[in-house]
Length: 379
Ligand code: SF4
Image 1 (cartoon, rainbow, N blue to C red):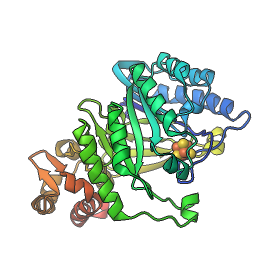
Image 2: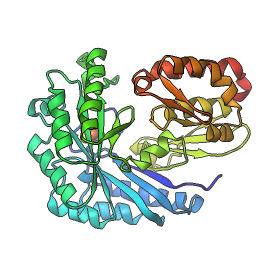
Image 3: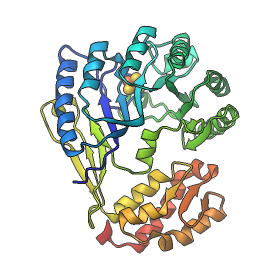
Image 4: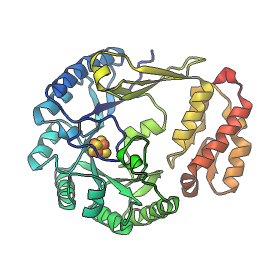
């Protein structure tokens, strides 16, 4: 196996309460569950380190609510990661307002975390209640202010286009706080969630209007849209998430964590591995492995790469997949460029803002061009 791995995702599955729209792998903590989780995590980290002993550029501790772990548990979690860090490594922890205070933020900083992704979602009490969040607007503001005071690079999660929500007010509040990064999503009603059972629906027009407002308000505050739903000051883009969108190699630890490794073989370009949920993961069940061949990899890399404003690096895509894609994509990409959805140069396919807004259609058309050229031999 290729040992190149500069990025690591670590999943903490515990949350104090379960939000009605959540379809992540989450559960409430029960007696002994966190201790068992930390023990297994340590073993899994040691095994992954044997395979990939290089230094890490990014670590992302997500969930769930990692900040719901107690101080000693978080310390143990970080102590179980044997990798050295590169200079200026980005170490992100997801935090929910209400699970941290000034003292805890200091403890988190002392663990080497330098970036916090704060699950604010809204600054409006009614909207927070609708989303089933346990924090209020004041604690969200306080957590952000304290995090900035400690010198963390701060990213906020906001959810937009919700019923009765004043989207402009939400965005202006977020922008005024002076954070480096905002992830502005719209609600996805996932099957099996309480919101789906209530038959809640979202309106495409409201979502498009919310995204347009996000570009306007966050853009005016110096936060540039660099991915479909993500805005950052120049240089404050999430390096960890960029690794996903660029289809690099990254490791995954914890239940339901996903990993991806470029393999570089003729028939297997990359391998995606997804850990099982907590009980099976604790029992030592190995990850599910999906191998991507040249065509499968090229399709996925296009889909991921076109989410970001930097677009897809065709040299890298051709080198990784072993396919000559420029020729194949040129006619369709030219048509999409004429429609104002893409910008093209010799080495890149770059989505415009309009292209990001119509990404699904752009991807389907490029995929069709790939599929008509490459036979199942490459899939
Ligand atoms: S806090 Fe996040 S991970 Fe936890 S239940 Fe709510 S949406 Fe899911």
